Length: 208
Image 1: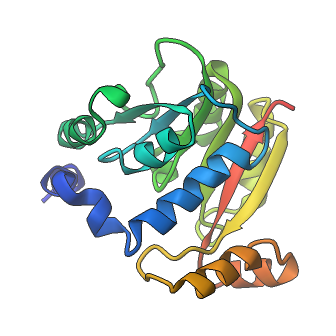
Image 2: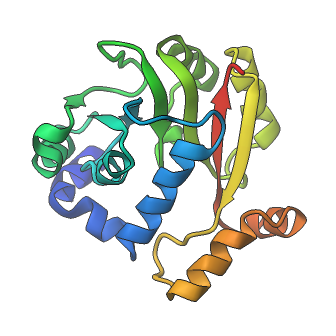
């Protein structure tokens, strides 16, 4: 079975399968989209490339932002449309080539940067229609951080904020432990040490 077929088969319950605590994980992700780097304001447009079934869209909309999802799998896009209804548009498209109908304040790419054919060209492409920032997650054990930062700067995205993301995807944490995990994201050397073994960065890149 191809990867595309696997995504198509899982489209109806993708978010529930992917995250042990959907609310905690996607709420924290949405908070960082809004606050990391240049702050987003109510009414700003967020373009979510490789949006899956649109689970993140609900958390983005809850923060007073506007949302547009894009996914290359027709079944995922259909599932996102059912989830979000009239609250947000969802398009079918490849993240490497897609261009929104109008510029957006922020573009996000989560759990999908490895689908980029040419990273430097992709950053340049996204920078042309993104007014405030590009936000994505990055596994520093899979990609050399300095190489990614160099590609961002080559695309004119020279102001870069990094935040470790310690809310686990496959484990649901009790409230007090979850609060500690979020606090540890700001712990500097300790956080960087943890990233050697697991977890990811959230990266916000902008022109200012």
